[in-house]
Image (cartoon, rainbow, N blue to C red; front, side, top):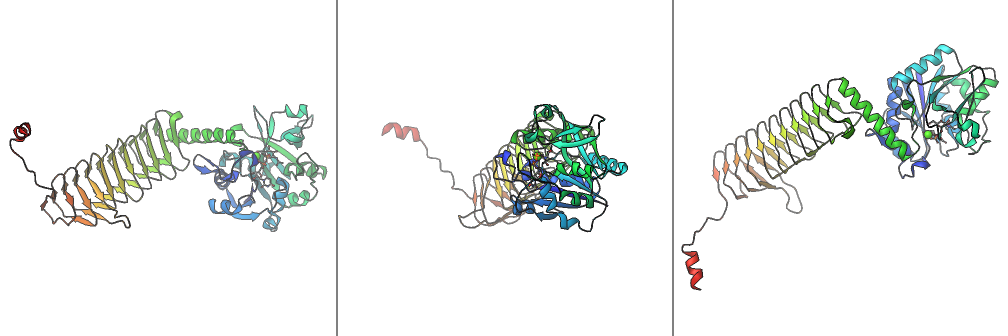
Length: 453
Ligand code: UD1
Ligand code: CA
């Protein structure tokens, strides 16, 4: 049984942010959640997260873990120590991770943990060869290559700073040996902190085996301390996501201008055109053509949907819909199968039935539109009287003429017709024609009269 301890109490001073560092998002998901997910994928059965800076917010933002408070942030060693009680009954290996390394993968952690257990080490540290090692702890090895200790950037001399092998901030420990040895770590260093890596020489001096395991892909161990690193991690995680989608049969025309969040799902043979943002927990079916210039946030999208130049959020679009250009679908909306909707249309908190057409310049709010309905250009549901919102219903196969105002609450019956330019304030019964506009008056010889005056 693998248990994990994740350090996430630091403020993240170098981010210069009001938000705790570990809640900054990469690939649309808080960094810390990425780390938790990687631990779970590696087979961890329990994750304890050390929180401190912004504790309440962090607690609310991450699911399915236990929390422990480090009231004062006195260093990574101190952070581990504050979780001692949580591991009082534990035996065997504890995996320790930092909340600011979001690119870690389940596979890497699994291989790393397996290597630790095979080696019978008391402690194993994950290392990486970084072309630019600035900010990381450097790995010092004896002449025979065995791990000696880790020196932090701020404590390193000029020669040590030239070392490219870094501490990834990922460790496996024999859990009880770790807590024993931690009592011997001091804060006698440049930052006056209790460093977790300092536990390694303590264990070594006590005759325990310590070792290092080098990650195959250094990028997976990227630590985020600054916004520049945040952007790099975001790019890397999105590329990884896009690669996985392409490998699963999704076409992405231009991965560089496509932004797909980590939890998004997209079906086979869907094509994603450039300048497209697919965010949150959006699910898209098969054989769709999405983009160019689409933003979907938390959307459910069926199969064979075509969408371009539009923003849709917290809503559902069923199979075969043609959407756009210039559509805004707002929360609580369901667009039924084979609906055509586009050319400057806004729909909010509404249901649109199968095969209906909303082809130009409409505002449809708080409305239930039946199947086979045709809504003419410029139609507006007047759903708000300045205080309250009211619903409109439009029955199956109704025909709403151009430039109609539907003043809610109002019902338009099945098969009813509304003459163009009507302002409908009363229900229209089934199969009736409603015309609600001033009659046209033609005044004869108008120009002749004008000439006389
Ligand atoms: C740390 C390591 C460094 C390593 C790097 C990898 C130490 C002393 N240094 O440096 O060797 O190369 O990570 O990315 O461990 N935290 C707490 N409580 C604290 C201090 C920190 O929970 O009192 C948490 C932070 O929230 C963060 C993690 O520990 O998630 C690492 O802290 P950070 O300050 O980012 O350490 P680095 O300087 O990056
Ligand atoms: Ca860090």
